[in-house]
Image 1 (spheres, rainbow, N blue to C red):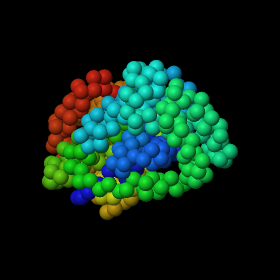
Image 2 (tube, helix red, strand yellow):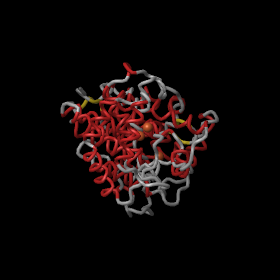
Image 3 (cartoon, rainbow, N blue to C red):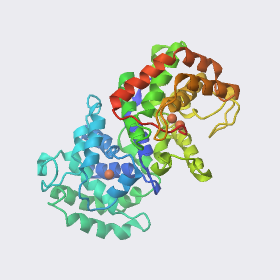
Image 4 (cartoon, rainbow, N blue to C red):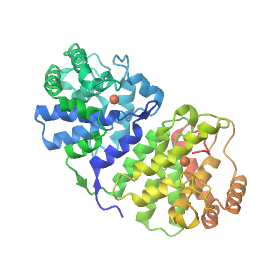
Amino acid sequence: MIQKTDLNKLLLTLSLAMDFSRHGLMRHHQRVAFISLRIGEELGLTLEQKQKLFRAAVVHDAGVSTWREKSYLESFDLVNPWDHCRSGAQLFKSLDGIINISDIILYHHDRWDGASESGLASEAIPLESRIIHLADRVDVLVSRDACLLDQRDDVVAKIKSQSGVLFDPLLVEVLEQVAVKECFWFDLLSEFIQYQLEEDVATDFISLEMTDLLSLGEVFASIIDGKSAFTHRHSRLVSGVAGLLAGQMGYSRYRCDMMLLAGLMHDLGKLTIPENILEKPGTLDGSEYNLIKQHTYYTYKILGMIRGFEEIRDWAAFHHEKLDGNGYPFHLKHGQISHGSRIMAVADIYSALVEDRPYRNGMPEPKIKEILWNEVKRKHIDGEVVDALVRNIDGAREIYNRLKLAAGNFICCSNRV
Ligand SMILES: [Fe+2]
Ligand SMILES: [Fe+2]
Ligand SMILES: [Fe+2]
């Protein structure tokens, strides 16, 4: 049972999943949060203001899922950065009752001089957005290949050249003061930045209702599924089917909700995989398949950092384990795979089979049942769970149809993830 959730730690942890790009784990969100907090501190913000600033900074690029878009945002001069601001704000709108950061995300690339899509200028732009904008641009100017202190003057000079144009002049002055301290630059690229952040924002244990956690799960499901047009809404489908099976197999309402949450997060680690592999329609070669295998590893590691999520982590991350021990990445065997994880594995396979792919339509029920029973025979998945699914196959199809209707053009191709 999830008692209390440390919301800051939760966002910090989940943002790690968003921070993979072609360079590996970039920690862009952590660094932007770190720079923002240093500026906020120098400005004398209250703890409450800093908490809000942190929460927005640590997920500010949630509107970007693909590595293509991430690469675009890495250059200093951006022509039209507002698409990802809009989609990020849209994602977090549903959480405004809990964290209220969607407007900050919406304006986080707004220019001080007002030449932005929103038309807002100077102090009409939320202060937190102005801080994050500046912090974000500092981070893209920094090279990870050279000593940061050697870069300090150039970075500050470049930012100063945009004072009153892109950036709030007062914040530029504050950055100059922050930049004097060597520790600021050492912290910025150190391995300790995550611990530093955890220290900075005093832990904030909040009793989140399960409905709030599910809303947060929906946000991350959208980010995960945004990686590829072919897996659009896949996480929601797996979540819905796993929740249905849990209910049919006697789980309590609360544990069914936990299952829904685990389903929304089951492919979280997919954010660490380049989209050209996720979207590849044909057979994967050996090294591409090896990369695919890391997705459940990262789902496990990232969810494992959140206290109270241990069971959800296991249900989510073991969906490619097989009862005979030949699954990945842990090669767990029969007795080591919990009932909840078995449900998730069946829900994932069912979803992959029922979904359309670019080169074939979703499969009809008789074919799906045949494949699932075959998997049972091969000692890959649990026969009782498959039996429960077969008895509720209409309910599962209904979930699929509902999502398909809601998504408009729904295509989901992968049976690999
Ligand atoms: Fe950014
Ligand atoms: Fe998967
Ligand atoms: Fe999946």
